[in-house]
Image 1 (cartoon, rainbow, N blue to C red):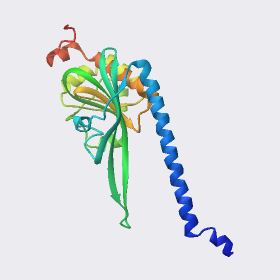
Image 2 (cartoon, rainbow, N blue to C red):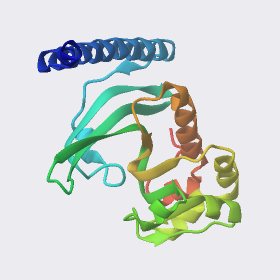
Image 3 (spheres, rainbow, N blue to C red):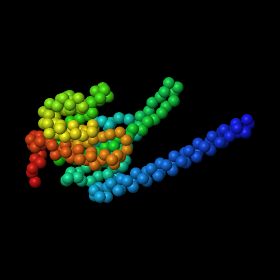
Image 4 (cartoon, rainbow, N blue to C red):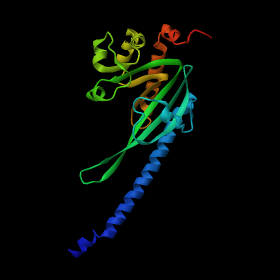
Length: 236
């Protein structure tokens, strides 16, 4: 019995804990190397490049998932062009803390993969988010709820706009039909950027699809909307 108990002495427990920490450290290093290799393999054929961790990305955007939590950071920043448009992809993170009934404090890190496309001019804010109880209860971006002619789209998405006329003009039937063929994804036009975001780290399995989606939205913005906001897409 004593020998059995000795196996669970504090020294054994500390040793096992130290070994687990080493294994976790090794796994983290190997995982990061694999991710960097996969990202480099994605970048090379597209002519994209790694970019410095531009801290201005932390404060550039006003809507979700930005503007909350502590220790806000951007990592995994890459950028390039697609069909003549400038895009970037990065991971945005922040921390939140909570205290349980026993007074123990814990910290959670929240990660979001963000893809952003630069627009040639400024547009009023328009946010499209998958409809859910959370999206209805959350503080919404924009000022006015917007419905389109498609009941399916209205059931699927919650739309907020600072300018209803511009929102309706952008979400015309052809774009709505295109969006209904896509998996549910949150996206927003904010100033001179269209961006989309999802929880987690850089997801190379969806990155091409996200880039194609943002490009399709930008291409679908009617010329008269641009003209009303000081840009002519046909001008050379």
